[in-house]
Amino acid sequence: AAIKKYQFDIKVKNVSRLCHAKPIVTVNGRFPGPTIYVIEGDRVIVNVTNHAQYNISIHWHGLKQYRNGWADGPAYITQCPIQTGNSYTYDFNVTGQRGTLWWHAHILWLRATVYGAIVIMPKQGTSYPFPRPSMEVNILLGEWWHTDVEEVEKQGISMGLPPNMSNAHTINGKPGPLFPCSEKHTFAMQVESGKTYLLRIINAALNDELFFSISGHNMTVVEVDAVYTKPFTTPSVLIAPGQTTNVLVQANQIPGRYFMATRPFIDAPIPVDNKTATGILQYKGIPNTVLPLLPQLPAPNDTEFAMSYVRKLRSLNTPQFPANVPIKADRKLFYTVGFAKDSCPTCVNGTRILASLNNISFVMPQIGLLQAHYFNKTGVFKTDFPDKPPTPFNYTGAPLTASLRTVHGTRLSRIPFNSTVELVLQDTNLLTVESHPFHLHGYNFFVLGTGIGNFDPVKDPAKYNLVDPIERNTVGVPTGGWTAIRFRADNPGVWFFHCHLELHTGWGLKTAFLVEDGPGQDQSILPPPNDLPPC
Ligand code: C2O
Image (cartoon, rainbow, N blue to C red):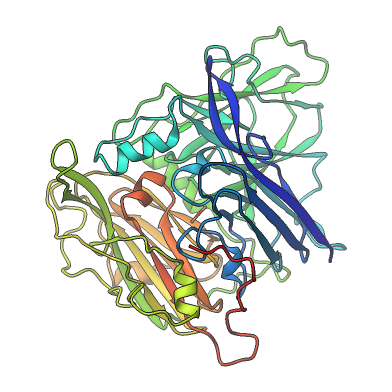
């Protein structure tokens, strides 16, 4: 194992897209930011120095950070933000994981421009469970706003207004030639006939679940969230914010130029598609003058495609890469995912939108929860997060306007070390209809099942996949439906759990799990590093 060192300088830089220039927050002046390359087993040391006028923290999305929440990154959960002029060193080991993950700013909406890929190669002497590709390419899907993202966020959160939609989607920071002034902001990759390519697709968008396709070419999915899958072939990939998907693409079509394209699955509240990003797959020797063809993408709100796609995702589950699904659950949790209206005297209509789990809208603390827990500081949070909603009701049949009393609180679930947790996330029809990609820090979980309508506590568990369910760190909860996950709580710490749609996170769609220390010597939270930022 090696030590890989990186320096991340957070600085503001003028970047122009769609005929407008604006200052954005970047790492080392790059957009998207630099890729972290490691080999499974390596230790990674990233020194982050903040030269910008914004407080910042960086999250290594999907890395488990065993006993080491100090390196996880979410502001006010595992650390206080790095203030202007200060530095913090994230120091962590990459063990037991290989594949594609990513990193992003984890405070306010800064991740709009502060993100990059993490590529973990299999450890020396091991190989991929699929034929070695000729070349590997990172495909980071994102969003671009004309306006300052902090302004957009303020509007969405404090003002109670729905936020402006982003102006374009992007592929590796580039919207592609369908947008004005964007010919030079087009991502292109060259391929050679007969060769196979590995695309590491990352959805870094703030608020959109995305389809991705390449005209004329099928893709074979081989990995999601740094977990190998049973390979399957598909014309389109569905990928939620926070998720990663590795696909193999064969250059097996008539040599030419082909568009790759990405656009939202559901662009709630109103499906619009004026921001499809495109890039180009170009066969060697084909001139740039040849016009590319647009791919067929599933229609917006194509729930049928989404459901059948999601059901094809299975863990590889071979002796080398077994799916160790916990067979029983020690603790069963049932969380409703919903919206509510809150009175807000300073807002335009006197109300604003809140989002809640079990009718609790999470309130961000003033200091990091992990510090509060580690140093036994009282009064920062409570561990009384309810295991189920206050009242059961017809979750998906309730009228959109029905409102349940939502309370505010910094409330966590306390989980004994090594217990197995099953969590059913039930979307409700309150106020608006949307799907939610939920992300758990510090863990992967198994996705035992998903369905449309109300979760049936008898019939649905009987159909759980306990053999080869997909294992991942971010999962979609379908609109008006449910998703059941299970994990073994073997990583002590305080772990954020939230919807990865940034708007919803801001509205309070989040909580955290406090996983207790185990009895063993190496089963407790490591001591914090000396340079942990103060609040
Ligand atoms: Cu990628 Cu807490 O997030």
